[in-house]
Amino acid sequence: MQKTTIFYGLSTLFMVLIIWQISVSLFDVNPILFPSPLEVLSAFYDSPEIYSDIIISMIRLVIGSIIGISLAVFFGVLTGHISVMDKTLGNMWNFLRFIPPLALVPLFLLWLGIGEFSKIGLLAWTSFFPTWISVHAGVKGLENKYLLVAKSLSVKKTWFLKEIVFKGSTNYIVNGARVGVGFAFSVLVAAEMLGAFAGVGYRISFLQSVYRIDRMIGYIIILGAIGLIFDRLFMGLSKHFTPWKNEPKN
Image (cartoon, rainbow, N blue to C red; front, side, top):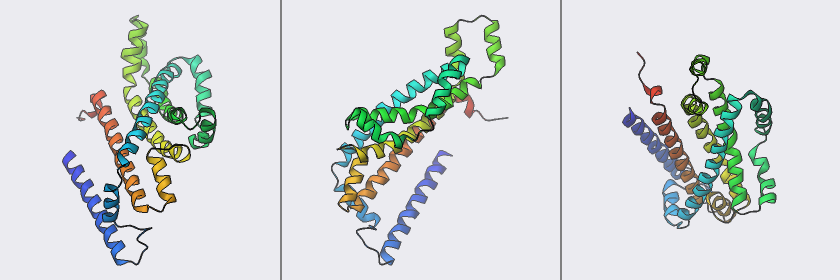
């Protein structure tokens, strides 16, 4: 099944590249604005700074996402398990999550400057809310019979939280983190475009100003590939931590 998926994916990519190359060759288009795949590939190899840009962006993404996801898991368990926390912090998070992260980019830049703190803080903010919603829903959705059995057996509170609450919502944590990282990924590019001197987003904005569309497309393709890798990573984590979800049904 996995080999079939990879085959279809590579076949589709190959077809898209062929159609792209043929279209550029047949139609009278501006080669600067509409470069061919071969020109994009050549420009990619002529961009030595691409490796450092990717590393810098990924470091920002990983640190910001880890902070946001960790806080989201903590508060998600609290608001999902404790009614008072749900009525206080839960309502506040529900209000704040409707504020678009991109609207906060100028504010974070003014508060924290154009250094790393503003970008990491914005990424933590962005990844927090999707993860929190998922964890909160997962904890609240635990079947009452398991909760009642645990309470009737007088199990310790720490064991109850670890073995029932936390493990019971593991799938929600992974899926929420998957969505959160995806949102953070897009916000990272926007933040780097507005206030950075290195990174993928900054480089795309700079290349646009000097009309290097071939290199721009190369960076955009790299972004898609990195995003796909992250997504598959979270899918693998979900299967690893929740093996019962993958068991065939009778």
